[in-house]
Length: 466
Image (cartoon, rainbow, N blue to C red):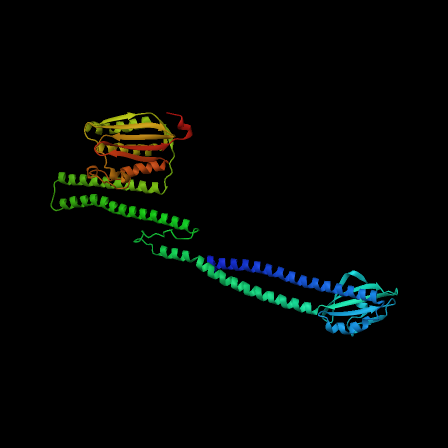
């Protein structure tokens, strides 16, 4: 049984989790440091107080000449001091001279360490924490006494426990507050994405003019909005071109099919002679050839745009190729009293078949629109790492407003130039140039002539030739 794919977490949930975790970590560290400082400070204060009490007891023994005067003081000290102290004074043989009432039961003298002015010992008796100090002092009569001092730290332990519980409560409340803040801030921060989603959802085939409009978006989202609007521009342009291409294609295919159907229907209305049937078949064959040419051109354009066809450029003499093309079209040119001229020399890196097709299309187009006594020049030249093939005529020319679209499929803006052909010739020329990594450009002036220039990049090996 296959498991269902894991649902990806949303950006909002990830931001909330990360923000809350970061806040919990920082707050936990801060409260931990605060806890350590407060507890450490309280312990140090108690240690200082214990040391001061030991110093006072030693001074009393030293100045009073003995420990006899401590008995009354020890009776009252246990009830009056904030910290619970227990004191025992021993003579040189270890006998108890004075002590806090009840100290023998709780803290026998054997539990105390050896005398030391600097060392304190922490122990736990009957569930209570104690800190012990032991020191020796000589009285004025030379008698050596041992002072055993104990401080009950139960209050400190209780304070530490309550303070720790308080900080834990503060940490829990702080983390909860951080989570609430994170949710609020994340929702507010991601609100532009929701607005962008709403804008995108309104876009459809009939509303390709809808735009996200990056103005007013947060700075981080502006590049995304700009990129999305640019993508919509390209989609709208492609959709418009596709719609226009579909309409043009339907028109181009409908005309020859209508001609074939009409002539056939007329021929079948009554019996015909063999010559009449032959004429109908010849006309139908011509229309079929036209349809075949259109389909071949469209297939080539589709493969070229889909990068379906890889070319293997071959270095050859461009002048020799254009001479062959000129010789092929010279009979047609002579019939129309048009002069074909070739000029220049260069070696070119291109697919020979595609090269001939591109230049032939340009020459054929020029012949179609050049009047009698006109001239067509096919020039080749090497410039700036490219080989340029320019076909120039002095024919009817093209109006300026049509120039931006002459390389589009089926585009024939000028009826005078649209009486023949399918409108795919220049589109094929540009596709061939693009396949070679080159370019196709056109210059034209109405009633003055047209110049189409193909540019092919040269390889290093061929750059110095020609």
